[in-house]
Figure 1 (cartoon, rainbow, N blue to C red):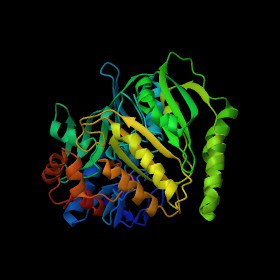
Figure 2 (cartoon, rainbow, N blue to C red):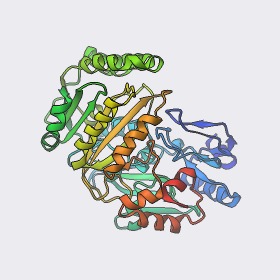
Figure 3 (cartoon, rainbow, N blue to C red):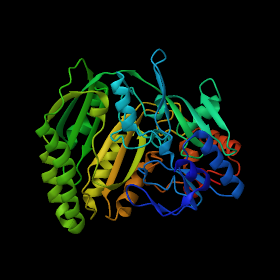
Length: 442
């Protein structure tokens, strides 16, 4: 199946992303079972004048992976290629899901240093769009990359690291699919460790007044503000000696399944049908979560199930601007007629050196706004985006935004470096699509 599909392509049907807000109908879909088959698929598409895009699990809210040409599904290119304990690295095929990587690493007594809050994505999809968690000292998943392999527009395989093709490495770790198709990634790993999580409700005024203090005192700090209320929920993750003390089965079910998924799904469905109920629901929901402390291995603390579907916008701001921007967002919601049923998420990341990373060259804080799937989100996101861009915000590459190349050329000092590399690696835009045309230019 993999070989036949890779060579001949399947009859394509419409592709839809996880949130359902992006669809595409490719000419054909290929599922290469080897890097060689992928190279062949890229060469053939280029000869036919077709665009090529790889798509992971569809967790991006943008059309970054959409194409009317050849859609590559890399899930057959999966698994651990090698594990080097002495070097502290693992090399993994690009179609591997983060959840599978984390479980294998844990079984080997190893771990990534930091993670986002879900692990359903492929490693290549997550890193290419700049997926991140929260961290005072530890950065995005892409910042943990030590080397990668890339199939370029001419079908060649390029190996990149700080020593080999360093100019490609500097950009391709967050490449948005514009420079080629990633086939393998080498991550830095470390011995498995424990994290103790402290989740605690806290008032909006207190958490914003003490934001820098919480940031400085914790390795990983984040919080959620519930619109239409003055209530937040905070989460502080710090390394500990262990042993593991995960939430009890009843507590875990109540917090992670009933409140965060089951009940949350129900109240969002009600809010979508009767928007006037949302402020009251928000006040009740924001008081339903209670303080809890638990200890476990990293991926079990960093990540949690997300079964309630939504659409999301997230902007990276200079960390010193985040509290002011969040207060402006609250004031905007309060004076508007908007009804927002999803909490607003705030996280942080240290500066990194990746050309189009949202944290490139500056210590960063993120504000993420969400709307329940099927609920009109444009008015809320437009108003939020106006606030974020006024603070020099950089939108997450895989989340809803309206910015274009002219904007990015102003807020990314190394934007020209990236686009020049794209011109060199893909002059005919084999990997292009409408989204890349908007955000990178022609």
